[in-house]
Each structure stands twice: as structure tokens, then as C-alpha cells.
Length: 440
Image 1 (spheres, rainbow, N blue to C red):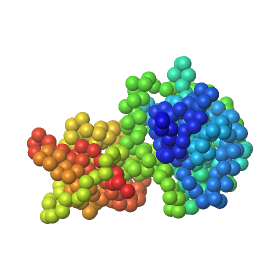
Image 2 (cartoon, rainbow, N blue to C red; image 1 turned 90 degrees about the vertical axis):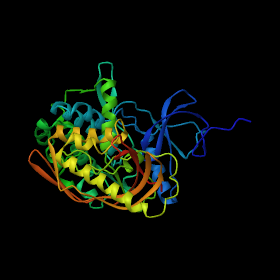
Image 3 (tube, one colour; image 1 turned 45 degrees about the horizontal axis):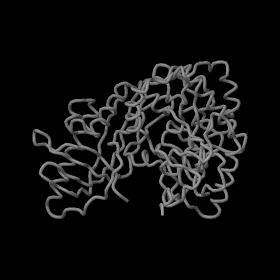
Image 4 (tube, helix red, strand yellow; image 1 turned 120 degrees about the vertical axis):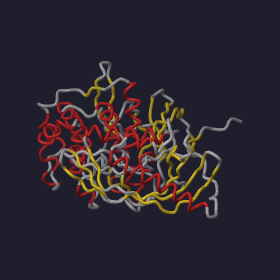
């Protein structure tokens, strides 16, 4: 008998699973095809308590009734599709974060067109009594037309704003203080996103045009509908999408610098595993845009690490890791490409991420001072003649970032457990091959 296809143990009756697309609020998102031949995105809804289940079901029902082209919400499915699966409209295209990385920012007219289009989409969502709660670079995709012009589509609509606090750097002031994101918070995040996406020399123009949308007081902000109306006469420029060859490299740089979605402490589920595992903080201020964090980007790991090696060798590896981390911090502060390369292996994921980070710092004209990363709890997991796997905890201290004369004080990060894969270089020095999250 043929074993039925499942996704995390849930039968996929009525769906034919395709390739993984990435990670969303409900874990890994997969492409799929319905029995009717419709291309969709599918993920598994996490189990929640009855009260949350009822609220989530009500939200999904409303979302299914909205057919706005700028909103990629859940779609109605046949009765044979398991109710534990979230089936949504499939949107293919780069994120606004990737577009920004590829083009070093949008022009002001493009950014205002982006703001107008997103405001129209949010206005429709708000009209149905819902807020998005996480308007951020990874949640805005650009659908492409034949002339390489993009139109923004908001994704990840099924996330529950009451249990998340937005993406670091894009959450409204009241959300950062503990309030649930509402329509006014969406407007602030939209405005912040559009300023962030604009090239440095034109941000003042965009900030001025968005006006009260960036006010700290939610009651002082315009509604999404009124913001769209205000921008209507200035938003006539479609977003230009670079060729695929350029987007590919930009996507890697963007993922290396992507910031976390903040999850409320009581919410026991992972949120966007790619960015949730990053060591980097966003460090973004509207009007003074700072690149992603300067901690090592964390790649997903496969097998579980082997048991730790015991003995006095642990101190020697602790000294080795401390030296590598300190050298990397100094190279980032000095913006010394050669010194930064000396910490990582040629052609390695760690070197690619560090080079992308330094390139972004230089292009944005951002300098960093006071950077220091503390190393603790280091222990070797596996060691051979020319390779080693070492587990350690990294804690990035508070530091300062300055762009265009404006200085942002970046708070200290909480400790992050990572596994460093090290290799022995030609000069017999240990260098970093990759950085991965410790298995939970």
C-alpha cells in the first residue's frame, strides 16, 4: 500500500506538495497545487488553546472573504483539505528587502508609490476590522510584470498581532511598549518601511511626504485610507525590479542582515526561523537607516551536534574563539576588508555574509563604534586534524552606529548560543567556515 503524503504528520489530501518557499509565521511554507490545479502556499497551523483557536478561525474566515490584489490571504479549499493546514494565495517575487539590497535603495517617487499601494492594501484590511501587525521588508513581495515593474503584495496575513510584536526596527512605538498592533501601528510600520527602503540621499523627501504617519502618538497618525489619498497625486512610479542575476546575490545579502520578528514571551512557537535564528539586531531608525546587525549571520544546521569533548582543551578553544570574535569586531569597526577576511575561510558562507555586511555599511555611510562581543561557555564538540565544531555563547554589547551625522545607540543583545564550524587555514590559523544556531 502506498503511504499517504503528509506534512509534519498531517495528511495532504486535496493538495500536491511542491518545493519549500521559505519560512513564515507558521513555520516552513511550501508551494502546493490544489485538486483544481490552483497554485497555493501551504503551512501547518500550530496547535493553540481553544480561545485562541476560535479567534484565529474567525480571522481566517474574514481574510478568506477579502479579494484585494495587494493582500495574499488564505484561500477557500475543498472539504478534504485538513483544517490544520493554512492554504494561502501563492505570490512569487522578491521581497522589498531584496530589492533594496539589489539597488541600494529606491528613488523617492518609487518609495511613495510603494507607500500608496501598501496603504491601499492596508485600508482594505482595516475596513474588515483586521490589522496586519508586522509590516516589514520580508512581508512585502514584489510581483513582476513583463516590463520588470513590480507591485507590492502583503503576505503573512494569518499571523496573530496579539501574540507578536512586529519585526525589530519596524514595530510602532506603542507596540514596542507592549500594546497589540492595530491599524495605526500598521500605518507607522508602513511609513518606517518606506523610509528605510529609500536611498540615503532622498529619505528626507519621503519622510516629509509621509508626514504624520511617523508620529509617536497613534491618534495623531492618518488612517491608511487617508494616507493613500494624500499620496495619490505623487505616486506614479512603478518599482523597478532588477534582473534575476542581480536579485540572487541581493537575496543572500538581505537574508544575512534580516532582523527578528519579536514574539511575545508567552507565545510558544517559532517565528520566521530564518530571521529568528539570526544573531543580528535591526538597528533601524526611520529617517536614519542603519544596516542589519553586525553579529554573525546564523545558518540552519542539519544533524544534531555530537556530545561535547571534555577536558582541558576547552580553555584552549575558548581562547581561540575569543580571539576570532575580537578580531572580527575590530575589523568591522575599522571597516577593514582584509582583516575581516582573515577571520573566515575563503569561499565560506561566513565570509560571504561578512563581506555583504561590510559592503552595506560602506554603501550606507554607516560607522560603528564601541562594538564588543563577549564569548562564554565555549566547548569543543568535534575536533579533527583540520576541522572543528565548537559551541559557544556570544553576547553583543551596546554600541553606537552613525549614519549621515545621526547616531543611534544600539542596546546590548541577549546571549545567543551558536555552533562555529572552524577549519585550519594554509597558515595553520583557525578560521570560521559557518555559524549555526545551537539545537534546542
